[in-house]
Image 1 (cartoon, helix red, strand yellow):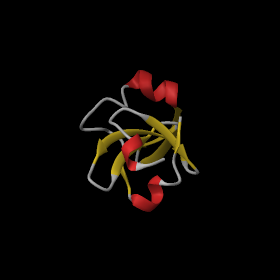
Image 2: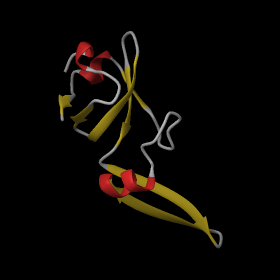
Image 3: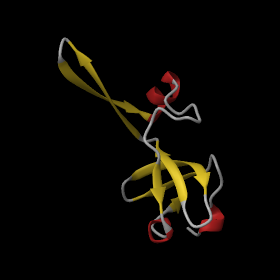
Image 4: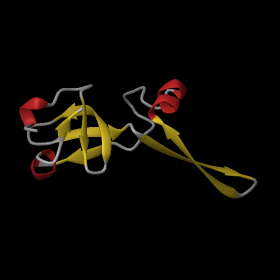
Length: 86
């Protein structure tokens, strides 16, 4: 893909997974991963890790924002070239 192909809310894939664009900068784009959401909580002093599918995370509101409860990842000019429209 090219930088001009991105707009807020568009979905795309790269070798790491499926993403949703949350911001478009001058030379970068920012996105959250939506195909697999990892959550961590502490229960009785022990970390509990849980993985949610896109559908489960959508129902629980993980993709609501900004601000987003998920880590936003910056894609630079080089990493944008690896992206494909979803």
